[in-house]
Image (cartoon, rainbow, N blue to C red; front, side, top):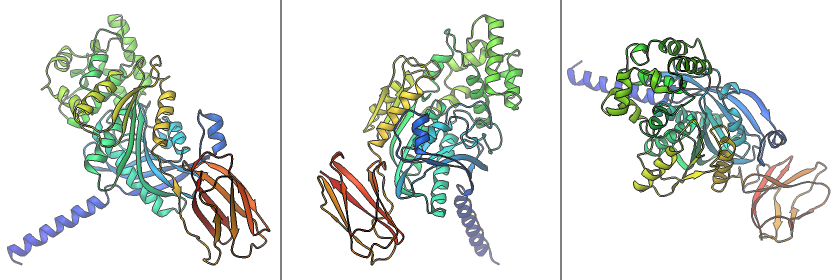
Length: 488
């Protein structure tokens, strides 16, 4: 074998290896049905009208860890329980959790918001994130790249799930949202989808909620000043996260934190205590040490000085690398916040809005949904705003506009457009079995339903409906017939 042949074989081997690696970068490994929540249960338990119930699945899929090594990740897939429609995909990024198993795939970690969004007619993916759930290692907290990759790879896995299961059919829309850390993760996912994955996904709209988008500026102002900040454990997790991701912040925890705080941080790193327990320990130590919950006082003086005054220091560089304000989203984007937020500085949204608009983003705004609500109280108004925003852009269409049974069993529907009464005529024998007739609005909500037996013409009164587009579905033993109906 000559040298040229060897080189050609080597190049071919590398190309094949690259193709294999790319093919398996975001594969669906498995799915496990967990439970269902009916439309009635959703409406009883939550604060909104719903268009459907949901089925919940724990999904395992592949995604790179923080060091770029392929790993098995987990997440929750929320599937609308009516298979008769094409549904949009929606990414829901969860907020800060207490530990490894406090995640959506375990029906924890704020999974209820994912279920609420699924009940609005969205096939919702809620990744657990890298380093949480089934994924190995420490979770890289508020790390934009892995927050994005966990979501994007779950979207690929969700499409594979739909290809394998006839009860879920998807359209081309993609919506993105999340709350708190999930707000940061949502904007990270939105950015990645537009800048890196636009050939496969088109973001329809994005609504990050109460997220720390300006990690290196607004969050530093909010957390490392003289004003007390009661969520000191977040700072510890960020330090551990960025040291893992960038590898050059410190070689031992007591290089970053003063010696009396470092052991608690190490216990959390080693999963010996939860985030909540860490917060209690650090808060008590600060009160004993300086008489106030001021996070700056648990940092080594050189580290604090670098964060506040040296933008070239590795810590400052890592913080800036996870800022998300300086780009131009093309999809409509709403940065949802509450002014009285006590965990995430509301100026994150306003500052990000201003930079994105200065960059020329076509449709970005920040929205104060309740000026007096703190971080916990902001969840409900922020979610309601997001649902209304998304529903105004959502397209839910019937899964087919053709008869799926025999072509000799069509129906005549007239008049169309209709004002008061829709006439539906069967052009074949009715048979003895009943036929189910349903009318849905454009959001996928059932507005009319009846059984049709032993008559050739069914009269459906639509006088009480608002003007607009509806979808008629007729289910019989011979299949499903569906068509668009315009009510005037």
